[in-house]
Image (cartoon, rainbow, N blue to C red):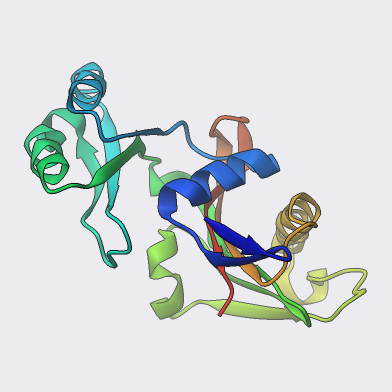
Length: 201
């Protein structure tokens, strides 16, 4: 991970998760390792659970990713990717039927930006989703999302923006990927769950 004057230059997925946790943002309980025995023990313990597995290796792009799979079904893939030199990141999957909204908050040197979809879905679907909305937030805006525009969802969206803005006040030119669940989720047991922190492009 590389920061210069509070700006992210480079960050791996595992480093992103650690940074979100350090900032106090809510994340899923994760397990990250390249040790075969540790990973096999984790997957055996969660053999009947629905989990997701991400992989990373150096600066590789588009590393293998497995979403919502039973732990027992990932064992052979995990062994294969460990032998290929990947670090594995595993965490319990959330049922998207409980998702009320998902999107990103971008904090920039100029305007901040909220992009979101109201309804069920995964963050990977955001940029191609037909119902994606964008709100541009100029500096010193008192009420970023207005109820006259977004009705009962405005309060939720303003809370998401405020939470991320306050937690990330030391950083700039970043994007936080998030989802809002109807039930309490994650390590902090909150409605807001954060998935990734990355550089704003």
